[in-house]
Image (tube, rainbow, N blue to C red; front, side):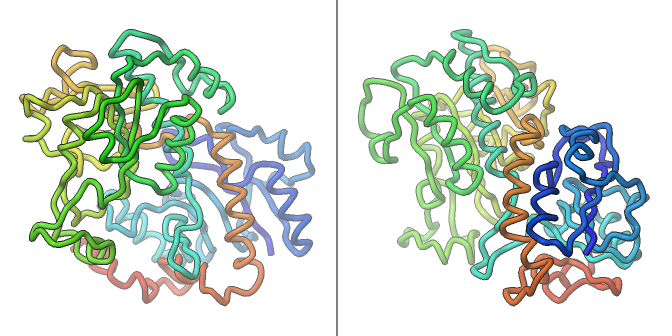
Length: 402
């Protein structure tokens, strides 16, 4: 089997890689029947010379490879027909901006294996950059708080050489003794954010303690959906019920919003789930939140202040709770917003190390060997015959533009 690491073609350029140089060597050592080729690129966090120095072949034309690995969406003119591709396509939720991409993939009879829907036999996601989205998103939250409070200044993430330097910046953080931070989500993203908060030494308390007790120093609580939603009919909260029918629930988050200075949003949100913070709630007089780091970054929903994605170079903007409009960051009376939608790009080497490790351990065995658990099959939105697979047949109207 020949595996190709493609050059990222999406603009703006993404510096992350599916496999770093050491990963490529490990792949070929672990699987002698596998050859790895890397398409030259000037934008990667790892230079071409770092691959070739370890004996990994650089090759412009990857048309003889069996499987091609990238990170972000591949431009239509860069897609090679009749190949297996692995990348984040952002199509399974019927995202309108990528409809033409999925149509082109079908026209070129490409098997698209989407990282975002790679799951184990129990239906759990097995790969993603979520951990580093949480790490960077939490860091940006406290960098933004420092700018608002003017108590300290943290270096922008992209100016840090690596995670080690990022962590050293945390020593500069100074928080008032009554500071309170709330976080939603405890999955891969939330766990990454927790890593940064734990390094700061902030005390974690339960939801009940957070709401009802006084504390002698900065505290935070990490919420799951059962903490920030409730049933509309007053019945007991049930996890299976929530995920099967989220429309039967409503937000119960505002009780935390009244008690929090900073909010870090790391949840996974389903389009049918209730809003977490509405425009009307953000305008209430007793809202305490002054800064929201929306790591999940779903525009306008479920957090109304996330009006648009922000950028790595300009990560913060202001939200006027009275008008619902964007205003300059740090405008008096506004809420600060962080909504960068490609956070792991700011620590590309660390994020790529994490991602490649998961690919080698949890995906490659099923690509190279037997796939009795249907790991590759379940994540294949299309097949090599130009058809949507059975699990993704629902995308046909989306492809057709209806």
